[in-house]
Structure formats: C-alpha cells, structure tokens
Amino acid sequence: MFKSTDYILALFACYCVLFGNVSMAQEVMSENAAGIAIYSADESSESAQTINVAQPSNWQNKVQEVLINALSLTGIQYKYGGSSPATGFDCSGFVRYVFHNAANLTLPPTARAIAQIGKSVKKNELQPGDLVFFNTLKKAFSHVGIYIGDNKFIHAPSTGKNVQVDSMQNSYWASRFEGAQRLDNEAEK
Image 1 (cartoon, one colour):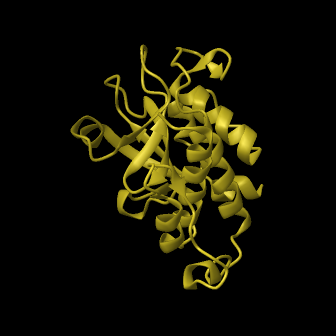
Image 2 (cartoon, rainbow, N blue to C red; image 1 turned 90 degrees about the vertical axis):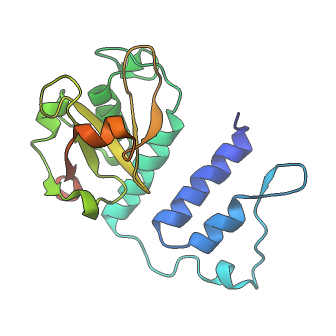
C-alpha cells in the first residue's frame, strides 16, 4: 500500500522517465533500510545537473498533467456510464474526465467516437498520453485507456474493478488491441 509521500515520489519518478532523466527516477525510487522511498541526489551530482535540460513543449506539459491526473484516480470504482470520481468511471468517462481536467479538451462520449479524433499512431510509436483502443465487446474500439509508457496503460476496466494500470503485453489486452490516437493537434486548437 502506497503512503502519500510514496505516491508523490512515484509520480515524480514517472515525470523523470517521461522527460528523459532515468537516473533521477532511479534515485527517487531508491529505498532506505526501513523501506521508505527516498531521493538522494545532491546539487553537485551529475543527475541533479541534468534536470530541465530541455523545455518541454506545450503538449508535453499537457501530457504530464494528463498522466498525473490519471494516476491520481487509480482505485476509483468502475461504473457503467460513470464520468466522475464521485460516481465512478467507465472507460470513456475516465478518459474524458482526465483530458478535460488536465488538458482542457472536451472529448466525445464513447470510446468509438473518441477513436475518430486525433491522429493514428502505430503501436511501436506510442508515447505517454496517447489513447489506446481495444475490442472488448466484439465491437471495434469498444474500450479506451491512456498509454503511460513501458507498454502500460491506465483505464477503467470493467464492472467490479477499479481504475488501474495494466500491461498491453498481457495476452488479454494484446489480442484485443485495435489502435491508438494522439491528441496533440487537438490540444493546439
């Protein structure tokens, strides 16, 4: 079970990985003898000097907010038709909520409709913040999640489950992958 400080450190580590500072992420996620996550870099260390090497683009800033917002909702209960943390989420309600709050984008109400916007992305070109679509109801584009990197995505899976991170390499998800969309151009409108 994550403590609140562990959760914040994990989010910071995700940010470091997303923006190319893996060594910083590794230091953030190290643990002391008591098993508490600690950050050990000092200002003179090489990794501390590599922070902010490049300014992220506007879209990268929005992706960062999207991922932090999405990860903060981990554990919220699935509810068919749900579109808020108070009521629970279905897959499209979760994605719509996250992108509206984090990137000020209003997305269509269904996974299938969301799949029609943005630009298509090949599976081997996925970047954090891309939307990933699956065929879970014997209908194309019936499920949507947010790609977070390292072949993982966050989503509201199904009744009885909670918002969670899953691997796209899991046989269930791998066999149902339909495609991906990037919304960077939508964010610039």
